[in-house]
Image (cartoon, rainbow, N blue to C red; front, top):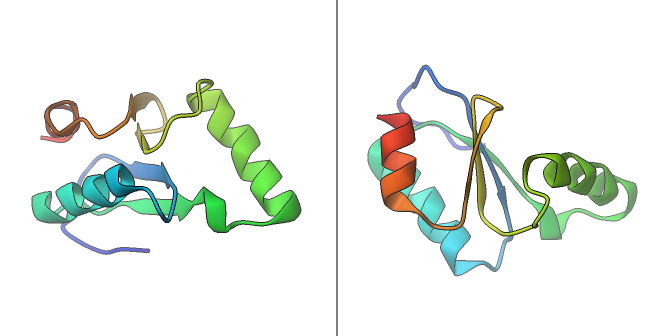
Length: 89
């Protein structure tokens, strides 16, 4: 897990280890000094991946990556720097 400046908002990313846009989203959050947790879904195996994908499909039924989940309610799909900044600042 990555550490950075504290934010009052909880930030969680569903990402793929090989996804350029996922890496850009992580870097954006680092540059903003935002602490976040993430999981590279493609690195999970078996029942662990099944469990995470079930959770993931509830917040993003279309399945795009990266998926940013803020405060467990707001979902931003894809690399959308303006929407991420607006939601977190």
